[in-house]
Image (cartoon, rainbow, N blue to C red; front, top):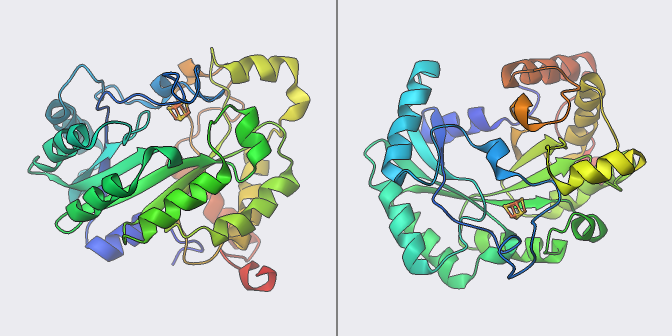
Length: 309
Ligand code: SF4
């Protein structure tokens, strides 16, 4: 038994197999880049840093899925099925007609059992969510919102283009349709202290999400965040690897015990970042370190949840 609710265990228990996500770039853009909300995007963003090589928008969705399956087959022989993960940019930012074409092409792949749709809280509406709920009658369909911070001042500072209240509303609209709903947050955004990040756990607990992903802030080359970091490093809390693991244990203790932890850290390929303060640490190693620290501290997810709520 793990001391936290991991997504790998949750999926295996719920669906009986290990499901591997395959990133699909369906050629969507983002309202924070094309001018409808803002231009230039969030100050930390460079989507290229999160793309595997098999997933580029010049290929059809079917080609990307075929190549992704080939890529993962060599690495994870035990995947019992695949989920098309519409990850880059905002994957509900198009007409319903276009969404139908893209999602249904992915679902027609014989090895794909469902979709994970990554998007912004301000890029969903009733009609799009109704359509996803309809797809969910016959497929696995999960929605993942980039929320990044619970604090409006931070969201404004990083040019996010939406408020936390909009995120809460999008989550509520999604869970009311019984769609499994996840959220992504970044730890270490400028202006946020350790205390603020810890206090955010209470707001996260109140969000009706099923799963959560955290990433430590990484400064991607060529972004506005890189410029800010160079001129105002004092705005950023920087964690050594050991400090981050320990700090994440503090967060885990405060999160509600039923929340599925999909990820708590991750590293983009070194060519995209201006430094790699942790060295190159693989995900399995991060998980091993977290589990070891939880054991050393004799604690677990949710240990402080009841007391604080
Ligand atoms: S992080 Fe997402 S919302 Fe922000 S600019 Fe990049 S694609 Fe758009």
